Length: 460
Image (cartoon, rainbow, N blue to C red; front, side, top):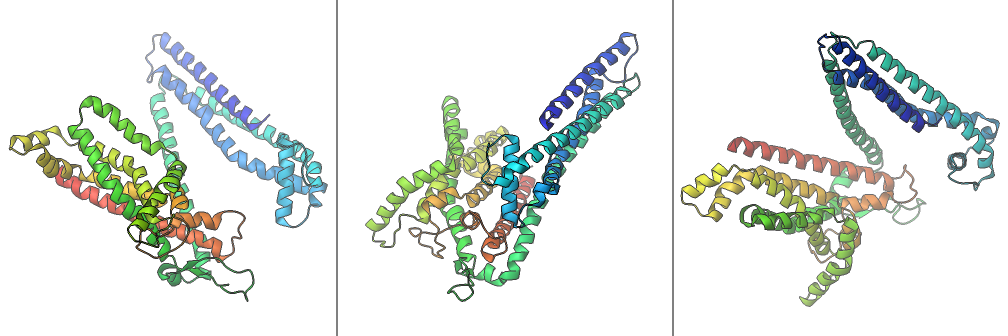
């Protein structure tokens, strides 16, 4: 029996227990007795008690089972003969696991075929044990809850408490996941700062993380000044892209909400939002094959000899087009939410429609507009594919939009691509960049909250 079969068994037990609890509650009410809660609440209470503890056990048992199976294989005579080198041993164990599960018929290493039967036997044994325990837990939970189905039991209150516990658990998972991500970035960043000075990282103007294998080679220390990367990120994502996205997104939102006929709005708004659903790699192709050559030709035609086929301007323009729906959608919702009484009051005082939009509607909708812009900036800062395909990988500290630059996310991808040693400054630099990017995004969100709170109080 596998854990997936146990999962279906637990759900079947929960459904059956719910059905029995509902019939029992109906039977109590059929005798002329008034129940404290409706039969459906009794059914939900029993079903939740049968399902939740067993499902939680299965969620914990699945990774534990994997570790137990591997320990069993290593403790066997064939496992004790494995080489001590970690990578080779892990490769053999991985092949043995794949043979045991049927993903492959023969392994590259002969030891894997000897370990495969041990893996299969251990997997079956531990899966059977885990499944049996899960089913027993489900039956125990159903029995415990079924005993509480009586006239005076407040089943509705019990269901609400269980649902509340599930909601709290979901919130804790999200919070703990965020905390785990931050701590993983922090610990690896501290390892990086033990190798490289934080002053050099934060204020250095040269980025060249290529470190030599031998100490006597030239450039063995590398250069980890992050200013060119953050400047490239701001230059492309927060300046060029926003110059394109904010005016176009805001004006399209004003047109759709204030001027467009209802029939035109029902067609234009979905078409505009399709831009948000296009994969970024498609934007990358468009930037690399169409926009970047056009930008290079434009630069050369106006006398800029350094115009490159990979430029910040090409990546920023396409990124700005990609972000238009984010700005437009948020601004559209905020403008549409402005009370009609405010517009009518302005028009009644003699203001024109355009004056009403400038003096009344946009200030009232400013919190949503600012939130949309900052969301768009966060989206632009995290974009990688367009930059890789259209802006290049050169860490240049330049304000010339026709030259090639790079961003933080692109360098993180470059540093972590392929097999890397996680004890070198080159690899650990990716975590330091990620931590710095996280702090910048957090500051942007705090500013957005501050702005929204301030203007929301002014217009309430």
